[in-house]
Image (cartoon, rainbow over all chains, first blue to last red; front, side, top):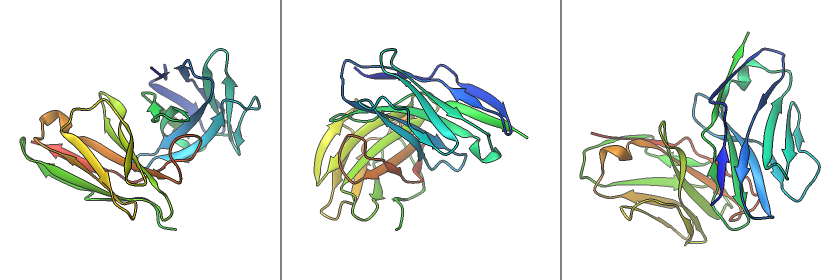
Length: 113
Length: 114
């Protein structure tokens, strides 16, 4: 069974600095997709970034980038130039072509002014 | 384009009752997934519907059921409510089922069982 592990329940970063959130997953499949979702205190989840496993190049979306290590089954999220609006719960998620989305337990990110 | 809407937003029920939650996906989206979110268990997948057919089902008892209508709107039903069913129920829609398609989440329905 596919599992997603986020080992950091809470993280803190100073405004304008960089923070990395960790995620590892377990799967025997070769074709899958990885996602980072953000859930601000208002509770509506939004997609931050996604990565197709077949792509070697790490995905980037503005200040957000990932470090995808397929062999190590690691998918970390780097947030550069952190802003107060980045404060939220961040969920790492895994999905294969035919299966449901599996989420990690989440990391609560606090941004200090 | 309007986002995913869920009704009602808040609900209080008594043990033993049943409840129906509704989800209207983004126009054009044919896949709807349901999740249960609790502080203890996190986000857990309930089921996914695509074109009125259940594609996947999570590890939940048969008290949890769902359906999807021809306009892609979806409902989930929980019968014989238990205290442990208190949770935030999230609905997410996407264009297709599975794969890299982004899921767009609704604001959720907060269910409290007393």
